[in-house]
Length: 294
Length: 294
Image (cartoon, rainbow over all chains, first blue to last red):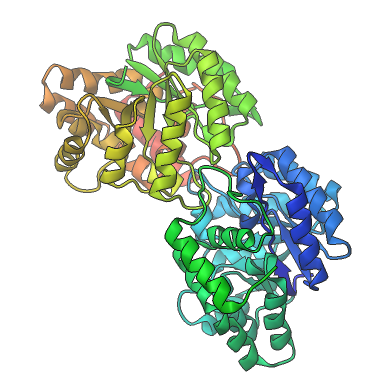
């Protein structure tokens, strides 16, 4: 399950309401494309903006639409009490694993973050994915802390942000610190092909939620040892990666899903806006150049 | 109301429950000391960790205990919908003004933050304090954005973080960009005396929630033109400021209130921990040196 392609679908809104039909559509589309797992209520799934009830409804709709594909459920919240409640909800709904980021208001210490994972792992039967996303949480993991947390029973995988420098060296260094059997996962779609080729087990993929076939092509190439082809396919998608880096992947992938008719317009929760008009134009051009369609 | 000393009380927990009795105790203590206003459910009041129901209960208890002292209510949340709900609750409970930080998960653009303030100011009758706290929100205001937001009808005051360099120059520059009549407030207790002397209207004060008499002494000196005495009194409290800068003001002031017997032990919401043992020892020493008591 912590292997191959894990697609992270959007949770589009329709006005102020979660659009459960659109969620189910995105999930079944990815499942049909053959993704290995689904990361529902990840950052791309807007978990941080949704109420407990909304999160439960999204998860149930997604699990229903996913068929046999395992669903990883985002359960992050600033307070441990709420994380535990959400973990219980995810387990009841039938999730296969939990995604947990150290969502912060007050900046957290290493001991506080360690304590969070220790507590959650102890109180759930589901395996936990450590969601390392400093851009949204404000918390930066050291390799020491990753190594400490990975030794907690129940911690199954680590989702790391895109390395800023030598991807292969970064993967090697972190891998050498982790216990055997901990799955290492990459996010930051533009480095995924390179990171998988360097030994990452899984790609926690934003684009996989909207363009699952293209993402699967990259993963299939790597699995078959065709590294060159994987890197080539990723390079072909560079017009999208450029926009990801400039505007943030959520705004771009939301605009892309809208452009392809998969979700309603203005699907992000306020105060978030979609792409500005310049971004929309660039995105429309990329869609044409890449010949994308739903 | 946006003038003088605004004391920010803690919201201590007792186990997982909000300790409303302790909240009322801290609030009435500050009110009796003669603070000009109270900032309830600020960062020091743990607003980001509390449910809607908890926030309403804290606010009601605080307003009840505050007597005639105006209460500013923190209404920050990552989603605009929730901010509006909390603003309605605060108004019903009898708050006098709203404190609003651009709490973020996805990093916000300037236009998104402007849109948030515009919407909230339009939908409430209460004046709004812009709560600029990049350490907790991850969002950095430019002076341009402050100036744009301050021109929205209903925006009454701006609470800025402690300037890192020349305090007086920073206050002067920002002041020159703001409309006449916008109250400028300082946070970062260790620079408050200097910032008030440089023309800030109000001190949004963490220490004012636990040591209101000492904080009021500083404000009274500045009001009477005794800048030297104000700076001296602030310098006397340097053992506390040193700890604030090292451990974060919330952890220190929570330990201090515990040390003085004002709140129960372990009053912070998990995953937050209190001070580590080294911090506790340093705090106990500071309390002795300064001769503090409840």
